[in-house]
Image (cartoon, rainbow, N blue to C red; front, side, top):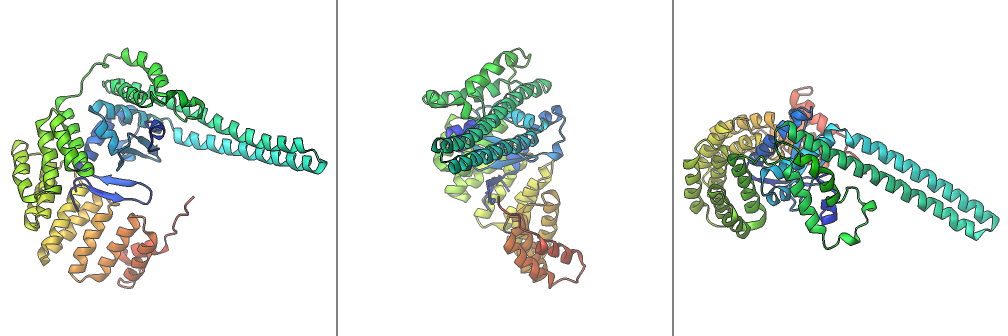
Length: 454
């Protein structure tokens, strides 16, 4: 589907360290799924990952529904806030952010940070024990001043451990900045966007700069990062290289979509007036019209975009969403079918939308086709809860209760609703022969041990 469903500046500073788009609320982060934007970020990241010696299929890029300018890594995932995209006026700014995060992955910084955390915790624990022992001994001797000193040992040790950890993190950030410039040079791209990002941060803290203790931050101050990078960045033969016109337009199309879906019709119109791309302006207005106005009035607008770019799968995808909003399941099926055909990389999200439209069509033939299309979608995107939800609807309408309950179990499992998933898995197990593939999968979910929250 199209677009589905730390915060204050100092937390932002720590970074850089269905309707069309679906906004899927995870247990921890509000994750956004959108085929067009995910494909764009993949195109931004792929050459950088290759330059860093990382395989593209081993790293996932995840969109987070947040207006803050932020990006971070966890495991083998790079998380990028939607706010990072809308605040970046050029693709190069986002590319610079991705280069920095890829440097963290390539450098194994997360693993070393865990080691430093363990070390800091050990230091804090030892000094706490020493401080407590000193305080107990002083108390036994009646020396009240020594009791206070014992407490000071504990507090001082913990503060030293914390500062040591922050110093280590700042050094890793500087290293990631330098490697980011190296990756950008290897891929013949400018590092100007990275400096633009740090300059933006510096402007944002200019009024409170005197109140910031640099030794209590996990990242260097923006002015320090600019100073460390500017000379080597400007030496690059690619420093003044511009993004291609097509890439800038794709970037503005992503911004148009995010503005329309997250900030309302007024924000979409404001963006449409400012952007230099007539296509992106019409895109923003089209999405706003179907979301907040009349889907039927949006149809000629999207048709105009399709006529200008008949091979663009995402215009067809939006047309499918408009048709769904207009309660035209048949029209949505046609639009999503064309979108899936035109999407050369294969999108589980678009395929899932096609399955959804077929389910809404409702006749037995469409329901059978929906199951096939949704199974294909899940081979491409096996952790998509919405695809499982549509699959459950298709099976349920065909009277295949066991398969519907298993799909519902999968939906809840991949949404993090483990207890509810177990309930439906237990029901599904009773519907299938013991040892069959469906029974085994239901049993896996039923036996799954819910991870403890730390």
